[in-house]
Image (cartoon, rainbow, N blue to C red; front, side, top):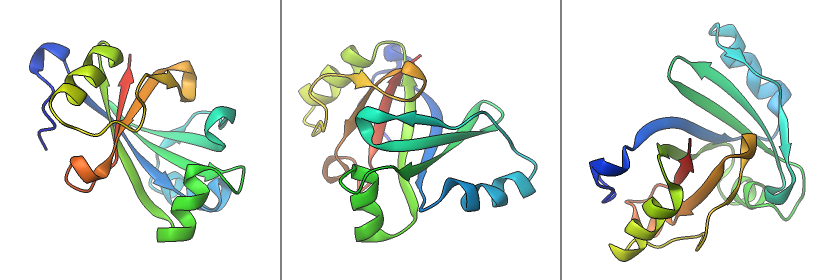
Length: 139
């Protein structure tokens, strides 16, 4: 998928985000595959608890809502558990976000915000990216 980010921004696939009702019950499958995980983390400003499973250079992020009005809770109510987003690591999320906006992509976040692990993130709306929610995250 080409979302218009030039190679100079050095985009790399980082993770797939999966919305789940329960991290505890959903993580069993990934553990049975032999994937290792870190500790779960609450990202208060997004109303979620997250748990990353490591698959080499990339990750699987399970996202469980901790509040009924979080974006993940709304997603689960509308679509049920499943693929929520894909994320690309970039060297500078502000430059990547501004580049995407200037190329006509719809930004959910007009400025980057803090996400899991304290990393700066910004989302692009699926209406402008072929139906997939895209997360840009800074190393």
